[in-house]
Image (cartoon, rainbow, N blue to C red; front, side, top):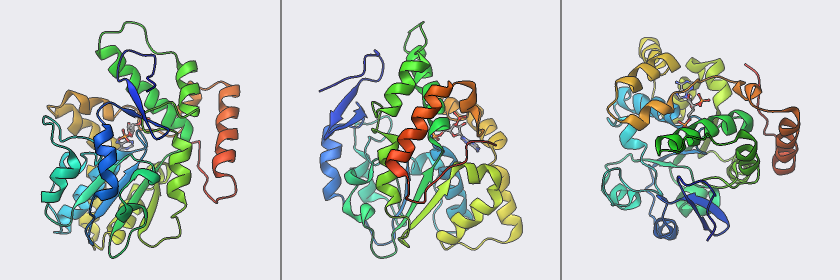
Length: 290
Ligand code: A3P
């Protein structure tokens, strides 16, 4: 087993992909046996691509649509992890969740239950994506914060962090592999792919898209309420009030293009080259400027 050199959040390797300790081998072993239901809703994202944001939208849309009344925290428990404050695996506790369930995961496509990698019935899978450079920067700040919270006085070095990110030496593996695995489903009607950059550009349109996908019709006023609650400002204010200390780091800057404050030209070129190698010609592209 390999582990990252930093003292915090040691990673372990499972079938060639690195995972944090909380994503135990046992949980990953259980994934192929996890039974999906015909009306499951899944939110798939690589860490730091806008998971919390999408979960807030999904939770609000389901609630105003009268489909389910659950907070974004409740629906945000990772399938591959444990229920916070207990040792019960989420995949076990999900067996008792009322339908429609919301299943959230950061897993690459090859590791999810078959009902999510090749969905049938009315299963709906929302895939959140963000440009890899901003994702790496967001991830850097997040990992660095937990690193310092655990007592380290020396910040992580961006140069080595970004190299490791590029090479997939990060929790949940390579972001580029994650994208290429899920993007294979982009023509499948069970899927909706949404980009962080598009949510930033037009949140109202994004909420509408999610609502349509989840078969919830919203009148204009309700739609506007949901939009207002899901802006960066509203979410940041709500997180600041939250008891969970960890919630506060989930709203940092919330912009497109922060990568320019960190990347050298060379680093930027190697990210572009990697993107071309993994996803060139697939029709997927990202915006890198606000
Ligand atoms: P930054 O670190 O670039 O600010 P995740 O929820 O997957 O961990 O993603 C976290 C990223 O989403 C952070 O990015 C965070 O600020 C951003 N984010 C969270 N809520 C947001 C919102 N309402 N609008 C825009 N960005 C948001």
